[in-house]
Image (cartoon, one colour):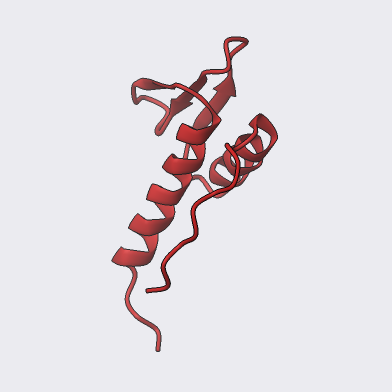
Length: 78
């Protein structure tokens, strides 16, 4: 695995919003909404609990976690 370089800046709300759009469109999240406080309200399934994420960095971390889970559970195609 290639080591990742640390980020030079914090993720923006626009970046988090782009990730949320992709995750919802691909049905990996049911819904996510940016609150006026900068927190994100995220729901994984229609009948699931709503999680409160502190900010955009947490949304990007959630997207990375979902990607890792998907990649680690699918069969290797090589």
